[in-house]
Image 1 (tube, helix red, strand yellow):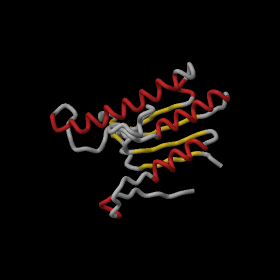
Image 2: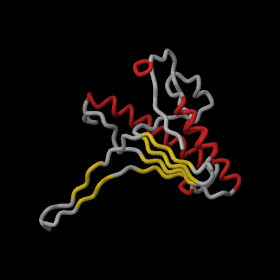
Image 3: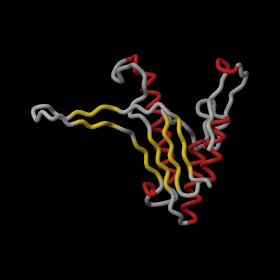
Length: 167
């Protein structure tokens, strides 16, 4: 079991990017035996070969997930990656208006990340859903008063968690 924290110039005075969390995620993903569970506030990554030199997205977590799924498909192993994300990033903005642009970019990059991973898995198997499930949470509440309509609320994921059965 490991506990990690992110560091940067403002928290520890580092002068260059600190990537120990990304390296730990990738290491545990590649060693996972049957499953990976990821819960993350933001999920932006890249499967491209040039991701490390790409000035936009350098995160390689999704590439590691793809490599591990590829290994499972080739070996005909049961293997599942479950990813939980918030439905919407926690930015105070209306998606329909100009101030919602940051949220639109965030959602767009997350959608590209998920779609590219799914598409790459689909090149390996006819059933990518056997290997990948992406979820978001919503709370459902039914009132005792039958006149009131049931309601749902977003459950916001702020954590950055990964579990893998690597031992």
